[in-house]
Amino acid sequence: MSEERKNETPEQSQPEEEKLDKKEAKAKAKLEEQLEKANADRDYWKNEYYKVHADTQNLRKSLEDERRAALKYRAEGFVDELLPALDAFHIVLDATPPNDQVKNYLVGFQYIYNQIENVLEKEGVTSICPAIGDKYDALTMHAVEAIENDGEPNRILKVQAKGYKLHDRLIRPVMVSVSKKAGESKEEKEEDKPEGEAPEGEKVHKA
Image (cartoon, rainbow, N blue to C red; front, side):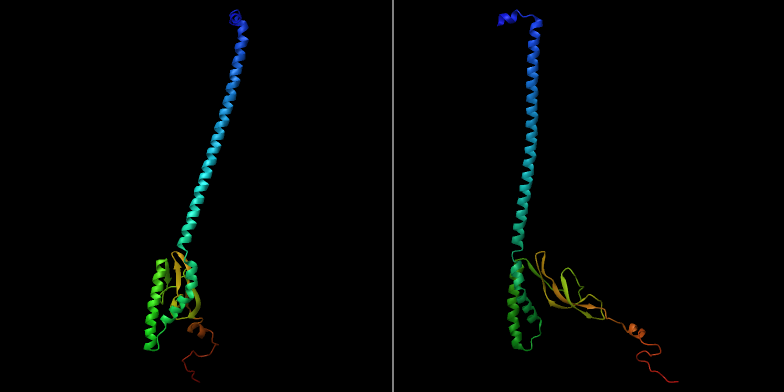
């Protein structure tokens, strides 16, 4: 075979070299195509990995937030069930005792009530009890009645029931009575009287 190639003329070996070059070019093109596809697959699965990783992190964070919220507000249902008893304490302790015997009982009730409040505070529960004359706050209060008053409107006249918060969550607003402007002023009443009628307090003298 080597003897035959030695006897070949340059014109005879050129087609063979061209054929080899074409095969090499074809093989190279195929390898480049496979490499390009492999790179595309790599980028695709890399992006998919990052997406799944991000989704997993978000899910983990969401579950952790839900777990923390469940622990933080775990006492909400219990406190809600306890509100009637707390209201009863508030009503009794706010009343004026009729005699010394009842007054002594109230001392014991106050001690028990303070203990309950201390336990609730450890769980993050705080009571809301505005002072008389404070401005009405719609975010933490609920007006159960509005009473006509000569003073400034939307002021607390009476606290009917305390409000309660668990950390930053409102369990129940304060139940309050608020002031409102009188329906008619004295001047408005005078204007509504028929013509010729004398104002209150003035006598009509006959001619």
